[in-house]
Image (tube, rainbow, N blue to C red; front, side):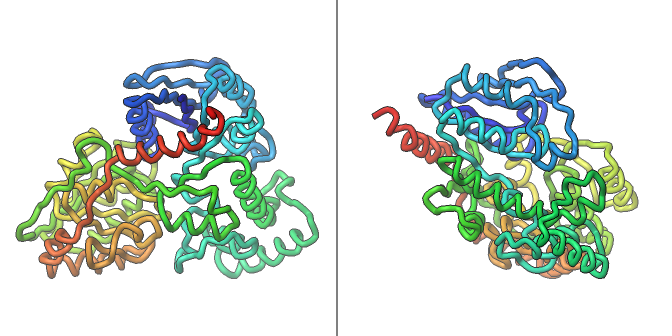
Length: 444
């Protein structure tokens, strides 16, 4: 059996959750009788190239499209689709497994359609919530939990808020957008900011249409969480198309450690992840600024970056003697590193699907303090095995930290309630069983 994994980036050039997940799945499958090949776009090149990454074949298909507004909005297909089709014909996989769909010239719905037209069995794993949510937050205007149902004008209003448009102006734009939408005037065809602003109802409608179109073309949609499975069902995706396979940890990391004892001040706090707005490092730094230096020591692990956000975060921490920038860390050493801390903080500013770092913290035997979004809340029970603070609110985060400073014994109590962690070997077994069921009719 051969599986072709499709995504937009891969190791070693790009290291993030989806890439690591795909690598581990390919590695475990290849340990059995399954051949796993990775396919990514060779952006900006007219040449198709190949390389090996730890015995996994990676093909970079030629993709030299000039990305414009129409391509980003999904109105035109990337030029590289033809090279993508040729790779499928050459490799002849039993299953084409998509791990990522993105707007523009990356792998997107046009590539899924190409595989479908070739009559290939198709799997799509949802690593993010953007298939149904235009902002990716699933928090209506950053305040209340959204039920996840795609509703044209509700989602339009939330999209305006996400772009920083104040309520008064947003109300006027929304009214005008509703009128042109009702009249069937698709202003996304206008190549200007007004057309974009008035065209949000059409963009939301396209997102809903594309979701159902995907559900018709793919054989199985794998969800990593129960909450997103429910949201897809709410939006009309048939339960028979959905398969729930929860997150897992690779290697020996899945064996949870016990780390009991009296937690003392200063609390040893750790953040690990990309230094980006989405990961909310600024919220954590803002909260710590309001607390005495001798109560908490924060170590930040993440790739050194020189973009504006990372530079601003470093400047914010310049006068904070209790903040240490630790740089990148080998993924194989993360759990061992985490076991030396009292608490992990995950201040995400978007709705994480199923953060692997929570599983890593649990395997290390430490609780997690995280923003209250779907993906975090499914794994963390507030006050039991960790704590949740209000979305995008450094004041709420500060209050939670103050509580733990005043009563550090709560951290030791939370350690006793940390759940067992699933191994990635179990994840791979579930995928292998899914693949086998999908191709069994063909073999018969």
